[in-house]
Image 1 (spheres, helix red, strand yellow):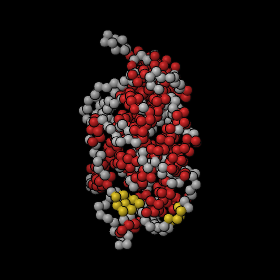
Image 2: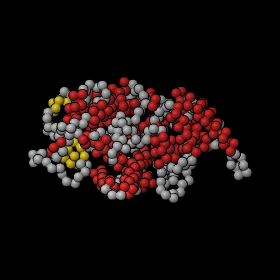
Image 3: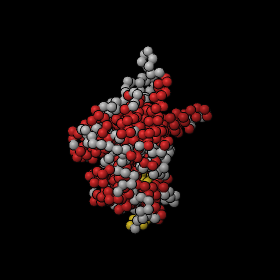
Amino acid sequence: MDEQGTPKKSHRRRSANWLACAALVLIAEIPNAVASDAAELNPRDMVLLDRLTWGINASSAAHLQALGNERWLQEQLHPAGSALPEAVRTQIEAMPDVHKFPFDIAVSFDQQAKSANQVADPDQRRAAQQVFQQAMNDRGKQAAARSILRALYASDQLRERMTWFWFNHFNVHQYKANIRVLVGDYEDRAIRPHALGKFRDLLVATLHHPAMLRYLDNADNAVGHLNENYAREIMELHTMGVGSGYAQADVEALARILTGVGIDLRPEDPQLKPELRPQLVREGAFEFNPARHDYGDKTFLGHLIKGRGLAEVDEAIDILVHHPATATHLSKQIATYFVSDNPPDSLVQQMAQTFKTTGGDIAAVLSTMVHAPEFTASLKPGMKFKDPVQYVLSAVRLAYDDKVILNTVPIQSWLNRLSEGLFNHDTPDGYSMTSASWNGPGQMMLRFEIARQIGSGSSGLFKPDMPNAVDQPAFPLIANSLYFNGLRQTLGPPTLAALDQAVSPQDWNTLFLSSPEFMR
Protein backbone atom coordinates (compact mmCIF):
# COMPACT_ATOMS: atom_id res chain seq x y z
CA MET A 1 0.00 0.00 0.00
CA ASP A 2 1.18 3.55 -0.63
CA GLU A 3 0.84 6.32 1.92
CA GLN A 4 -2.75 7.01 0.84
CA GLY A 5 -3.73 3.38 1.35
CA THR A 6 -3.93 2.59 -2.38
CA PRO A 7 -2.73 -0.88 -3.40
CA LYS A 8 0.55 -0.74 -5.27
CA LYS A 9 0.51 -1.67 -8.96
CA SER A 10 2.43 -4.89 -8.35
CA HIS A 11 -0.16 -5.93 -5.78
CA ARG A 12 -2.95 -5.17 -8.23
CA ARG A 13 -1.24 -7.26 -10.90
CA ARG A 14 -0.84 -10.20 -8.49
CA SER A 15 -4.49 -9.86 -7.52
CA ALA A 16 -5.63 -9.85 -11.15
CA ASN A 17 -3.43 -12.83 -12.01
CA TRP A 18 -4.58 -14.76 -8.96
CA LEU A 19 -8.21 -13.97 -9.77
CA ALA A 20 -7.83 -15.28 -13.31
CA CYS A 21 -6.32 -18.52 -12.00
CA ALA A 22 -9.07 -18.87 -9.42
CA ALA A 23 -11.70 -18.36 -12.10
CA LEU A 24 -10.15 -21.13 -14.20
CA VAL A 25 -10.28 -23.43 -11.19
CA LEU A 26 -13.95 -22.57 -10.67
CA ILE A 27 -14.89 -23.31 -14.28
CA ALA A 28 -13.58 -26.85 -13.82
CA GLU A 29 -16.06 -27.27 -10.99
CA ILE A 30 -19.15 -26.23 -12.98
CA PRO A 31 -20.40 -29.75 -13.76
CA ASN A 32 -20.01 -30.83 -10.13
CA ALA A 33 -21.41 -27.92 -8.10
CA VAL A 34 -22.67 -29.18 -4.73
CA ALA A 35 -24.95 -27.82 -2.04
CA SER A 36 -25.69 -28.34 1.64
CA ASP A 37 -28.68 -27.47 3.78
CA ALA A 38 -29.30 -23.77 4.25
CA ALA A 39 -29.47 -22.25 7.69
CA GLU A 40 -32.59 -20.13 7.20
CA LEU A 41 -33.58 -20.18 3.54
CA ASN A 42 -34.36 -23.57 2.07
CA PRO A 43 -31.94 -24.24 -0.83
CA ARG A 44 -34.77 -25.71 -2.88
CA ASP A 45 -36.84 -22.55 -2.40
CA MET A 46 -33.91 -20.43 -3.51
CA VAL A 47 -33.47 -22.51 -6.66
CA LEU A 48 -37.22 -22.31 -7.36
CA LEU A 49 -37.07 -18.54 -7.07
CA ASP A 50 -33.98 -18.30 -9.23
CA ARG A 51 -35.43 -20.69 -11.83
CA LEU A 52 -38.79 -18.97 -12.32
CA THR A 53 -37.59 -15.35 -12.18
CA TRP A 54 -34.76 -13.38 -13.71
CA GLY A 55 -32.68 -14.11 -10.63
CA ILE A 56 -32.91 -14.28 -6.86
CA ASN A 57 -32.21 -11.18 -4.80
CA ALA A 58 -32.88 -10.14 -1.21
CA SER A 59 -36.24 -8.47 -1.85
CA SER A 60 -37.65 -11.32 -3.96
CA ALA A 61 -36.50 -13.89 -1.39
CA ALA A 62 -38.21 -11.94 1.39
CA HIS A 63 -41.41 -11.75 -0.68
CA LEU A 64 -41.45 -15.50 -1.29
CA GLN A 65 -40.85 -16.18 2.40
CA ALA A 66 -43.68 -13.85 3.36
CA LEU A 67 -46.19 -15.48 1.01
CA GLY A 68 -45.09 -19.09 1.06
CA ASN A 69 -44.28 -21.11 -2.05
CA GLU A 70 -47.77 -21.89 -3.30
CA ARG A 71 -49.22 -18.45 -2.80
CA TRP A 72 -46.16 -16.89 -4.42
CA LEU A 73 -46.46 -19.28 -7.36
CA GLN A 74 -50.15 -18.49 -7.90
CA GLU A 75 -49.33 -14.77 -7.78
CA GLN A 76 -46.75 -15.34 -10.52
CA LEU A 77 -48.97 -17.58 -12.65
CA HIS A 78 -51.93 -15.19 -12.44
CA PRO A 79 -50.49 -11.69 -11.92
CA ALA A 80 -53.02 -8.95 -11.26
CA GLY A 81 -50.74 -6.43 -12.93
CA SER A 82 -47.12 -5.45 -13.32
CA ALA A 83 -45.78 -3.24 -10.55
CA LEU A 84 -42.77 -1.21 -11.65
CA PRO A 85 -40.78 1.21 -9.49
CA GLU A 86 -41.45 4.87 -10.22
CA ALA A 87 -37.87 5.32 -11.45
CA VAL A 88 -38.43 2.57 -14.03
CA ARG A 89 -41.76 3.97 -15.20
CA THR A 90 -40.15 7.39 -15.63
CA GLN A 91 -37.44 5.96 -17.87
CA ILE A 92 -39.94 4.04 -19.99
CA GLU A 93 -42.37 6.96 -20.33
CA ALA A 94 -39.55 9.17 -21.62
CA MET A 95 -38.96 6.88 -24.62
CA PRO A 96 -40.34 8.06 -27.99
CA ASP A 97 -43.12 5.97 -29.55
CA VAL A 98 -43.78 3.99 -26.36
CA HIS A 99 -47.52 4.69 -26.58
CA LYS A 100 -47.80 4.85 -30.38
CA PHE A 101 -49.27 2.09 -32.52
CA PRO A 102 -47.09 0.30 -35.07
CA PHE A 103 -49.03 1.80 -37.98
CA ASP A 104 -48.19 5.35 -36.88
CA ILE A 105 -44.60 4.43 -36.08
CA ALA A 106 -44.03 2.69 -39.41
CA VAL A 107 -45.70 5.49 -41.40
CA SER A 108 -43.54 8.12 -39.71
CA PHE A 109 -40.31 6.25 -40.44
CA ASP A 110 -41.46 5.41 -43.96
CA GLN A 111 -41.94 9.12 -44.64
CA GLN A 112 -38.55 9.92 -43.14
CA ALA A 113 -36.90 7.34 -45.41
CA LYS A 114 -38.62 8.75 -48.49
CA SER A 115 -37.59 12.28 -47.58
CA ALA A 116 -33.96 11.21 -47.09
CA ASN A 117 -33.88 9.39 -50.43
CA GLN A 118 -35.29 12.39 -52.28
CA VAL A 119 -32.52 14.79 -51.24
CA ALA A 120 -30.81 15.89 -54.45
CA ASP A 121 -27.28 16.51 -53.21
CA PRO A 122 -25.46 13.15 -52.81
CA ASP A 123 -23.58 14.13 -49.65
CA GLN A 124 -26.67 15.60 -48.02
CA ARG A 125 -28.70 12.56 -49.07
CA ARG A 126 -26.12 10.25 -47.51
CA ALA A 127 -26.18 12.31 -44.29
CA ALA A 128 -30.00 12.22 -44.20
CA GLN A 129 -29.96 8.45 -44.71
CA GLN A 130 -27.49 8.06 -41.85
CA VAL A 131 -29.76 10.11 -39.59
CA PHE A 132 -32.64 7.84 -40.58
CA GLN A 133 -30.65 4.67 -39.84
CA GLN A 134 -29.52 6.08 -36.49
CA ALA A 135 -33.11 6.89 -35.58
CA MET A 136 -34.09 3.27 -36.29
CA ASN A 137 -31.10 2.04 -34.26
CA ASP A 138 -32.22 4.22 -31.35
CA ARG A 139 -35.72 2.71 -31.43
CA GLY A 140 -34.24 -0.78 -31.31
CA LYS A 141 -31.98 0.19 -28.42
CA GLN A 142 -34.92 1.70 -26.53
CA ALA A 143 -36.96 -1.46 -27.07
CA ALA A 144 -34.12 -3.49 -25.57
CA ALA A 145 -33.92 -1.03 -22.67
CA ARG A 146 -37.63 -1.50 -21.89
CA SER A 147 -37.22 -5.26 -21.99
CA ILE A 148 -34.22 -5.15 -19.62
CA LEU A 149 -35.84 -2.75 -17.15
CA ARG A 150 -38.96 -4.91 -16.95
CA ALA A 151 -36.89 -8.05 -16.52
CA LEU A 152 -34.89 -6.50 -13.68
CA TYR A 153 -37.70 -4.83 -11.73
CA ALA A 154 -41.19 -6.04 -12.71
CA SER A 155 -43.13 -7.78 -9.97
CA ASP A 156 -44.57 -10.32 -12.44
CA GLN A 157 -41.22 -12.04 -12.94
CA LEU A 158 -42.56 -15.29 -14.38
CA ARG A 159 -44.47 -13.35 -17.05
CA GLU A 160 -41.23 -11.57 -17.93
CA ARG A 161 -39.39 -14.89 -18.18
CA MET A 162 -42.14 -16.19 -20.47
CA THR A 163 -42.10 -12.98 -22.51
CA TRP A 164 -38.47 -13.65 -23.36
CA PHE A 165 -39.23 -17.33 -24.03
CA TRP A 166 -42.10 -16.54 -26.41
CA PHE A 167 -40.21 -13.77 -28.18
CA ASN A 168 -37.43 -16.28 -28.80
CA HIS A 169 -40.02 -18.84 -29.92
CA PHE A 170 -41.68 -16.36 -32.31
CA ASN A 171 -38.36 -14.75 -33.15
CA VAL A 172 -37.97 -11.74 -35.45
CA HIS A 173 -34.64 -10.14 -36.32
CA GLN A 174 -34.56 -6.41 -35.74
CA TYR A 175 -32.09 -5.63 -38.52
CA LYS A 176 -34.32 -6.86 -41.32
CA ALA A 177 -36.06 -3.97 -43.12
CA ASN A 178 -37.66 -1.59 -40.59
CA ILE A 179 -38.28 -4.14 -37.83
CA ARG A 180 -36.12 -2.08 -35.44
CA VAL A 181 -38.93 0.46 -35.13
CA LEU A 182 -41.56 -2.26 -34.63
CA VAL A 183 -39.79 -4.73 -32.35
CA GLY A 184 -40.64 -2.91 -29.11
CA ASP A 185 -44.35 -2.89 -29.95
CA TYR A 186 -44.12 -6.54 -31.02
CA GLU A 187 -42.84 -7.51 -27.57
CA ASP A 188 -45.07 -5.09 -25.66
CA ARG A 189 -48.37 -5.78 -27.45
CA ALA A 190 -48.11 -9.10 -29.27
CA ILE A 191 -46.00 -11.15 -26.81
CA ARG A 192 -46.17 -9.91 -23.22
CA PRO A 193 -49.98 -9.62 -22.81
CA HIS A 194 -50.41 -13.26 -23.91
CA ALA A 195 -47.27 -14.76 -22.32
CA LEU A 196 -49.31 -16.54 -19.61
CA GLY A 197 -52.62 -16.72 -21.47
CA LYS A 198 -53.99 -18.95 -24.22
CA PHE A 199 -51.51 -20.06 -26.85
CA ARG A 200 -54.02 -19.47 -29.63
CA ASP A 201 -54.29 -15.79 -28.69
CA LEU A 202 -50.51 -15.51 -28.71
CA LEU A 203 -50.21 -17.16 -32.11
CA VAL A 204 -52.89 -14.88 -33.58
CA ALA A 205 -51.25 -11.77 -32.08
CA THR A 206 -47.92 -12.62 -33.70
CA LEU A 207 -49.62 -13.43 -37.00
CA HIS A 208 -51.30 -10.02 -37.06
CA HIS A 209 -48.19 -8.04 -36.17
CA PRO A 210 -46.29 -6.28 -38.97
CA ALA A 211 -42.93 -7.27 -37.45
CA MET A 212 -43.67 -10.97 -38.03
CA LEU A 213 -45.31 -10.44 -41.42
CA ARG A 214 -42.30 -8.42 -42.58
CA TYR A 215 -39.69 -10.75 -41.06
CA LEU A 216 -41.06 -13.97 -42.61
CA ASP A 217 -42.11 -12.31 -45.87
CA ASN A 218 -45.84 -12.99 -45.73
CA ALA A 219 -46.40 -9.39 -46.81
CA ASP A 220 -45.14 -10.64 -50.20
CA ASN A 221 -47.37 -13.75 -50.23
CA ALA A 222 -50.09 -13.44 -52.86
CA VAL A 223 -52.07 -15.59 -55.25
CA GLY A 224 -49.83 -16.38 -58.20
CA HIS A 225 -46.74 -15.31 -56.22
CA LEU A 226 -46.67 -17.82 -53.37
CA ASN A 227 -44.15 -17.27 -50.55
CA GLU A 228 -43.94 -20.26 -48.21
CA ASN A 229 -41.55 -18.82 -45.59
CA TYR A 230 -44.09 -17.96 -42.91
CA ALA A 231 -46.25 -21.03 -43.50
CA ARG A 232 -43.24 -23.31 -43.09
CA GLU A 233 -42.03 -21.66 -39.89
CA ILE A 234 -45.50 -21.67 -38.33
CA MET A 235 -45.53 -25.45 -38.65
CA GLU A 236 -41.85 -26.20 -38.13
CA LEU A 237 -41.14 -23.82 -35.24
CA HIS A 238 -44.24 -22.10 -33.89
CA THR A 239 -46.65 -25.04 -33.52
CA MET A 240 -46.17 -28.70 -34.50
CA GLY A 241 -42.39 -28.96 -34.73
CA VAL A 242 -40.02 -30.76 -37.07
CA GLY A 243 -40.88 -34.36 -37.91
CA SER A 244 -44.42 -34.14 -36.54
CA GLY A 245 -46.19 -35.57 -39.57
CA TYR A 246 -46.88 -32.66 -41.88
CA ALA A 247 -45.77 -32.76 -45.52
CA GLN A 248 -44.64 -30.20 -48.10
CA ALA A 249 -48.20 -30.22 -49.46
CA ASP A 250 -49.40 -28.95 -46.07
CA VAL A 251 -46.84 -26.12 -46.16
CA GLU A 252 -48.07 -25.13 -49.62
CA ALA A 253 -51.70 -25.32 -48.50
CA LEU A 254 -51.02 -23.10 -45.47
CA ALA A 255 -49.12 -20.63 -47.66
CA ARG A 256 -52.16 -20.44 -49.95
CA ILE A 257 -54.41 -19.93 -46.92
CA LEU A 258 -52.17 -17.04 -45.82
CA THR A 259 -52.18 -15.26 -49.18
CA GLY A 260 -53.38 -11.70 -48.84
CA VAL A 261 -52.34 -11.45 -45.18
CA GLY A 262 -49.87 -8.59 -45.09
CA ILE A 263 -49.08 -4.95 -44.33
CA ASP A 264 -50.48 -1.70 -45.73
CA LEU A 265 -49.23 1.71 -44.58
CA ARG A 266 -51.29 3.73 -47.05
CA PRO A 267 -54.06 5.88 -45.56
CA GLU A 268 -56.49 4.96 -48.33
CA ASP A 269 -57.98 1.51 -48.88
CA PRO A 270 -56.79 -0.50 -51.90
CA GLN A 271 -58.89 -0.40 -55.06
CA LEU A 272 -61.06 -3.53 -55.09
CA LYS A 273 -63.87 -5.00 -57.16
CA PRO A 274 -67.24 -4.35 -55.51
CA GLU A 275 -67.75 -8.02 -54.65
CA LEU A 276 -64.42 -8.14 -52.77
CA ARG A 277 -64.77 -4.95 -50.72
CA PRO A 278 -66.67 -6.60 -47.82
CA GLN A 279 -63.73 -9.03 -47.44
CA LEU A 280 -61.14 -6.29 -46.85
CA VAL A 281 -59.78 -6.22 -43.29
CA ARG A 282 -57.52 -3.43 -42.03
CA GLU A 283 -56.40 -3.21 -38.40
CA GLY A 284 -53.58 -0.72 -38.00
CA ALA A 285 -50.74 -1.85 -40.25
CA PHE A 286 -52.27 -5.33 -40.66
CA GLU A 287 -54.23 -5.95 -43.82
CA PHE A 288 -56.09 -8.82 -45.40
CA ASN A 289 -56.38 -7.88 -49.06
CA PRO A 290 -58.89 -10.16 -50.81
CA ALA A 291 -57.48 -9.25 -54.24
CA ARG A 292 -54.22 -10.97 -53.20
CA HIS A 293 -55.90 -14.07 -51.74
CA ASP A 294 -56.16 -17.53 -53.29
CA TYR A 295 -59.86 -18.41 -52.98
CA GLY A 296 -59.43 -21.99 -54.13
CA ASP A 297 -60.25 -24.83 -51.72
CA LYS A 298 -57.31 -26.32 -49.80
CA THR A 299 -56.59 -29.59 -48.02
CA PHE A 300 -54.57 -28.87 -44.88
CA LEU A 301 -53.44 -31.65 -42.52
CA GLY A 302 -56.26 -33.83 -43.82
CA HIS A 303 -58.92 -31.13 -43.39
CA LEU A 304 -60.78 -29.60 -46.33
CA ILE A 305 -60.76 -25.80 -46.00
CA LYS A 306 -63.18 -24.06 -48.31
CA GLY A 307 -61.86 -20.90 -49.95
CA ARG A 308 -63.63 -18.00 -48.30
CA GLY A 309 -61.04 -15.45 -47.23
CA LEU A 310 -59.58 -14.54 -43.84
CA ALA A 311 -61.81 -17.09 -42.08
CA GLU A 312 -59.56 -19.77 -43.60
CA VAL A 313 -56.69 -18.49 -41.45
CA ASP A 314 -58.74 -18.87 -38.27
CA GLU A 315 -59.69 -22.42 -39.27
CA ALA A 316 -56.07 -23.36 -39.98
CA ILE A 317 -54.96 -21.87 -36.65
CA ASP A 318 -57.55 -23.96 -34.81
CA ILE A 319 -56.28 -27.10 -36.54
CA LEU A 320 -52.69 -26.30 -35.59
CA VAL A 321 -53.40 -25.32 -31.98
CA HIS A 322 -55.40 -28.49 -31.33
CA HIS A 323 -52.96 -30.82 -33.07
CA PRO A 324 -51.38 -33.21 -30.49
CA ALA A 325 -47.92 -32.48 -31.91
CA THR A 326 -48.27 -28.81 -30.97
CA ALA A 327 -48.98 -29.65 -27.33
CA THR A 328 -45.94 -31.93 -27.18
CA HIS A 329 -43.59 -29.58 -29.04
CA LEU A 330 -44.43 -26.54 -26.94
CA SER A 331 -44.35 -28.50 -23.68
CA LYS A 332 -40.88 -29.82 -24.46
CA GLN A 333 -39.66 -26.33 -25.34
CA ILE A 334 -40.96 -24.91 -22.07
CA ALA A 335 -39.52 -27.79 -20.04
CA THR A 336 -36.15 -27.36 -21.74
CA TYR A 337 -36.23 -23.68 -20.82
CA PHE A 338 -37.02 -24.24 -17.15
CA VAL A 339 -35.94 -27.78 -16.22
CA SER A 340 -33.07 -29.32 -18.19
CA ASP A 341 -31.51 -29.71 -21.61
CA ASN A 342 -33.23 -33.10 -21.90
CA PRO A 343 -36.44 -32.87 -19.86
CA PRO A 344 -38.00 -36.19 -18.79
CA ASP A 345 -40.55 -37.44 -21.30
CA SER A 346 -42.95 -38.15 -18.42
CA LEU A 347 -42.92 -34.44 -17.51
CA VAL A 348 -43.39 -33.34 -21.12
CA GLN A 349 -46.39 -35.66 -21.51
CA GLN A 350 -48.03 -34.34 -18.32
CA MET A 351 -47.62 -30.80 -19.59
CA ALA A 352 -48.88 -31.73 -23.06
CA GLN A 353 -51.97 -33.33 -21.57
CA THR A 354 -52.72 -30.13 -19.65
CA PHE A 355 -52.21 -28.12 -22.83
CA LYS A 356 -54.78 -30.29 -24.62
CA THR A 357 -57.37 -30.36 -21.84
CA THR A 358 -57.20 -26.60 -21.20
CA GLY A 359 -57.15 -25.50 -24.83
CA GLY A 360 -53.56 -24.31 -24.64
CA ASP A 361 -53.64 -22.45 -21.31
CA ILE A 362 -49.98 -21.51 -20.78
CA ALA A 363 -50.30 -20.76 -17.05
CA ALA A 364 -51.95 -24.15 -16.51
CA VAL A 365 -49.12 -25.88 -18.39
CA LEU A 366 -46.57 -24.09 -16.22
CA SER A 367 -48.48 -25.04 -13.08
CA THR A 368 -48.43 -28.69 -14.12
CA MET A 369 -44.68 -28.43 -14.70
CA VAL A 370 -43.88 -26.79 -11.36
CA HIS A 371 -46.05 -29.22 -9.36
CA ALA A 372 -44.62 -32.31 -11.07
CA PRO A 373 -42.17 -34.51 -9.13
CA GLU A 374 -39.75 -34.30 -12.05
CA PHE A 375 -39.54 -30.54 -11.63
CA THR A 376 -39.09 -30.83 -7.86
CA ALA A 377 -36.25 -33.30 -8.46
CA SER A 378 -34.54 -30.72 -10.66
CA LEU A 379 -34.49 -28.08 -7.91
CA LYS A 380 -30.88 -28.57 -6.97
CA PRO A 381 -28.10 -26.02 -7.37
CA GLY A 382 -26.12 -26.78 -10.50
CA MET A 383 -28.89 -28.50 -12.48
CA LYS A 384 -29.74 -25.83 -15.11
CA PHE A 385 -26.99 -23.83 -16.81
CA LYS A 386 -27.85 -20.18 -17.35
CA ASP A 387 -27.84 -18.78 -20.85
CA PRO A 388 -26.19 -15.32 -21.21
CA VAL A 389 -29.43 -13.36 -20.73
CA GLN A 390 -30.27 -15.22 -17.53
CA TYR A 391 -26.68 -14.95 -16.31
CA VAL A 392 -26.27 -11.20 -16.84
CA LEU A 393 -29.72 -10.22 -15.57
CA SER A 394 -29.45 -12.44 -12.50
CA ALA A 395 -26.03 -10.94 -11.71
CA VAL A 396 -27.37 -7.38 -11.88
CA ARG A 397 -30.49 -8.27 -9.86
CA LEU A 398 -28.36 -9.86 -7.14
CA ALA A 399 -25.78 -7.06 -7.11
CA TYR A 400 -28.23 -4.13 -6.91
CA ASP A 401 -31.57 -5.65 -5.84
CA ASP A 402 -34.23 -2.91 -6.15
CA LYS A 403 -31.78 -0.04 -6.75
CA VAL A 404 -32.85 1.03 -10.25
CA ILE A 405 -30.12 1.31 -12.87
CA LEU A 406 -30.10 4.41 -15.05
CA ASN A 407 -28.49 3.01 -18.20
CA THR A 408 -29.08 -0.36 -19.84
CA VAL A 409 -26.45 0.13 -22.55
CA PRO A 410 -23.74 -1.81 -20.62
CA ILE A 411 -26.14 -4.76 -20.28
CA GLN A 412 -27.00 -4.62 -23.97
CA SER A 413 -23.29 -4.58 -24.75
CA TRP A 414 -22.58 -7.57 -22.48
CA LEU A 415 -25.35 -9.59 -24.09
CA ASN A 416 -24.10 -8.72 -27.58
CA ARG A 417 -20.57 -9.80 -26.63
CA LEU A 418 -21.97 -13.06 -25.25
CA SER A 419 -23.74 -13.62 -28.60
CA GLU A 420 -27.27 -13.43 -27.18
CA GLY A 421 -28.15 -9.83 -27.88
CA LEU A 422 -31.82 -8.93 -27.54
CA PHE A 423 -33.68 -9.07 -30.88
CA ASN A 424 -30.40 -9.96 -32.63
CA HIS A 425 -30.88 -13.60 -33.69
CA ASP A 426 -31.15 -13.52 -37.45
CA THR A 427 -32.84 -16.88 -38.13
CA PRO A 428 -36.41 -17.83 -37.13
CA ASP A 429 -35.38 -20.65 -34.79
CA GLY A 430 -34.33 -18.26 -31.98
CA TYR A 431 -31.43 -18.72 -29.58
CA SER A 432 -30.54 -22.16 -28.27
CA MET A 433 -31.80 -23.04 -24.80
CA THR A 434 -29.28 -25.82 -24.14
CA SER A 435 -26.07 -25.43 -22.16
CA ALA A 436 -23.72 -26.73 -24.89
CA SER A 437 -24.31 -23.50 -26.81
CA TRP A 438 -23.15 -21.32 -23.92
CA ASN A 439 -20.59 -23.13 -21.73
CA GLY A 440 -17.55 -23.27 -24.00
CA PRO A 441 -14.19 -21.89 -22.81
CA GLY A 442 -14.45 -18.69 -24.84
CA GLN A 443 -17.91 -17.96 -23.49
CA MET A 444 -16.78 -18.64 -19.94
CA MET A 445 -13.79 -16.32 -20.16
CA LEU A 446 -16.11 -13.56 -21.40
CA ARG A 447 -18.38 -14.25 -18.43
CA PHE A 448 -15.46 -13.90 -16.04
CA GLU A 449 -14.62 -10.54 -17.58
CA ILE A 450 -18.24 -9.37 -17.29
CA ALA A 451 -18.39 -10.72 -13.74
CA ARG A 452 -15.44 -8.47 -12.91
CA GLN A 453 -17.15 -5.45 -14.46
CA ILE A 454 -20.38 -6.06 -12.54
CA GLY A 455 -18.61 -6.98 -9.32
CA SER A 456 -16.07 -4.17 -9.26
CA GLY A 457 -18.29 -1.11 -9.56
CA SER A 458 -21.22 0.49 -11.30
CA SER A 459 -19.79 -0.14 -14.82
CA GLY A 460 -21.82 2.72 -16.26
CA LEU A 461 -25.15 1.27 -15.12
CA PHE A 462 -25.83 4.40 -13.09
CA LYS A 463 -24.64 6.93 -15.64
CA PRO A 464 -27.61 8.10 -17.74
CA ASP A 465 -27.20 7.57 -21.48
CA MET A 466 -27.07 11.24 -22.40
CA PRO A 467 -24.39 13.88 -23.09
CA ASN A 468 -22.51 15.24 -20.06
CA ALA A 469 -24.20 12.78 -17.71
CA VAL A 470 -22.58 12.17 -14.33
CA ASP A 471 -22.05 8.65 -13.02
CA GLN A 472 -24.13 8.22 -9.87
CA PRO A 473 -22.47 6.50 -6.88
CA ALA A 474 -23.31 2.81 -6.65
CA PHE A 475 -21.55 -0.33 -5.54
CA PRO A 476 -22.67 -3.95 -5.87
CA LEU A 477 -23.56 -5.56 -2.54
CA ILE A 478 -23.61 -9.34 -2.82
CA ALA A 479 -22.22 -10.40 0.58
CA ASN A 480 -25.48 -9.42 2.30
CA SER A 481 -28.02 -11.12 4.53
CA LEU A 482 -29.31 -13.23 1.64
CA TYR A 483 -25.81 -14.59 1.15
CA PHE A 484 -25.14 -15.37 4.80
CA ASN A 485 -28.65 -16.71 5.49
CA GLY A 486 -28.96 -18.84 2.40
CA LEU A 487 -26.77 -18.56 -0.67
CA ARG A 488 -23.60 -19.45 1.20
CA GLN A 489 -25.03 -22.86 2.03
CA THR A 490 -25.42 -23.65 -1.67
CA LEU A 491 -21.71 -23.25 -2.41
CA GLY A 492 -19.27 -26.11 -2.70
CA PRO A 493 -15.91 -26.26 -0.88
CA PRO A 494 -13.81 -25.05 -3.86
CA THR A 495 -15.93 -21.91 -4.23
CA LEU A 496 -15.91 -21.20 -0.49
CA ALA A 497 -12.14 -21.65 -0.40
CA ALA A 498 -11.69 -19.26 -3.33
CA LEU A 499 -13.95 -16.65 -1.72
CA ASP A 500 -12.01 -16.87 1.52
CA GLN A 501 -8.86 -15.85 -0.36
CA ALA A 502 -10.38 -12.77 -2.02
CA VAL A 503 -8.18 -9.73 -1.47
CA SER A 504 -10.94 -7.11 -1.73
CA PRO A 505 -14.73 -6.82 -1.88
CA GLN A 506 -14.42 -6.36 -5.63
CA ASP A 507 -12.47 -9.60 -6.00
CA TRP A 508 -14.98 -11.39 -3.74
CA ASN A 509 -17.90 -10.20 -5.86
CA THR A 510 -16.14 -11.20 -9.06
CA LEU A 511 -15.34 -14.67 -7.75
CA PHE A 512 -18.89 -15.21 -6.55
CA LEU A 513 -20.34 -14.19 -9.93
CA SER A 514 -17.75 -16.43 -11.63
CA SER A 515 -18.53 -19.44 -9.47
CA PRO A 516 -19.97 -22.63 -10.99
CA GLU A 517 -22.93 -22.36 -8.63
CA PHE A 518 -23.89 -18.90 -9.91
CA MET A 519 -23.49 -20.01 -13.53
CA ARG A 520 -26.36 -22.43 -12.93
